[in-house]
Length: 203
Image (cartoon, rainbow, N blue to C red; front, side, top):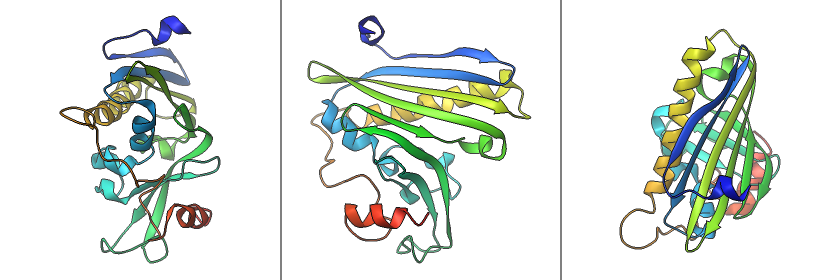
């Protein structure tokens, strides 16, 4: 495992394909410690591209970083709408493993894969490397889909890689990003983090 984490530059590839699935993996070094990167990573509204949302607005994303928690998106009429007042919501993924500052694993079929009979597992791992952090995103997809694997796999690879690059970009430039108080969600119900966790159970 140590050799797998020994990187100094971004790495990306479709590591495996089959008739019914594929694996993509991206890895990079982020200029921040694991705690800071973790806090940013569990706030997808800060870095996940809104082009890959159903509403076109990344501010509608929220994530509850505990087992059973939701990486979801509110369908809002106004920016003031919360989880109770919004027109609806979308579950992108569900948290199945969360270990603070180390690993987040989610289950879900992202984007156009949502309408297919597939299972997707996204593992987001963090490993300290001095004052920096090695981050790895691995997404495995398997099941029945009408998309040709040789076409959908590179597209998904690009999306996953883009999100890791955008997370890393938060730490570019002078100083670390202000992630204190971000908590584990985008506060979809207008309450504190514990309230967001409670409301997310209704999703």
